[in-house]
Image (tube, rainbow over all chains, first blue to last red):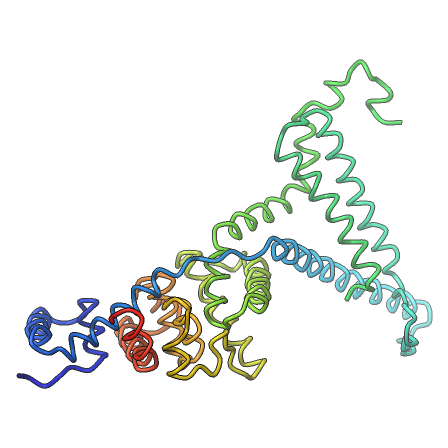
Length: 174
Length: 196
């Protein structure tokens, strides 16, 4: 009888990942060799048990958390750029008036005290006005198409954006 | 005073559905992306979560990884070129996220089978599937990736090669080594439970 085969070869045999003549040769060997036959049965049992493991579902909270993170990230991007824009505008105006660059004093918020960056108040207000407008438009659309799922979702999304925006405002945009 | 309040009798004219649609256009552009994203989530959530669960061995961490994966998918949706199937792209992000997560934690994740000895395996009341689920988290990284994607998730070697950026031959070779390693570890259990 030929020398026994390794588990790797037996696994390849199981998946038909070998040349036809090798498959034939191993098949003949397995009929005679109980050791290789048993090894092959065990590898088969492992493969079958693995492939019968069920697909799992994440809990519902996962989707809400993803949405929250996605929106938070988007708001942050808007504010970072609007904050940079506002700061640049202030520096430019002062430069034009005084004729030289201004040293903006560094401020460190006291522990537990929240500060609102200059220029951001207006941006926050504009952003909230935009969302409020979207909510109103959705409400109008809903009054006309109360059963339209797209409009319903648009309304819910707009409301949700409102809540998320407030959430980010109160957390200081972190 | 709104258009409607000024002229309530002309309601349809003041808010015809076309006008409403155009009013909504601004927000629907942004929302459309979210609708697409929601569809992507629904389509792929169980693939991502199951894969993550099999990598890390517990639900809480798999939930965190699932979140990270989909936030990344959302951020990079524009850059997805469609060269491969979206599921392949998402699997790639998932596998990378799993290993980033494990590296950050700097420890191996074990399920309820942590420290299982041959003796405990033989006397374990768990199904072979559950035992494998636990043992997979002990496999070396390269073996684990291919075993989970091929034997558990049912992907083809061609897809795995794309996801892991390896050849199909390498994928096959890693799979056979992974099964061999598992048989070595599980031999007593398999012999006693399944093959008499």
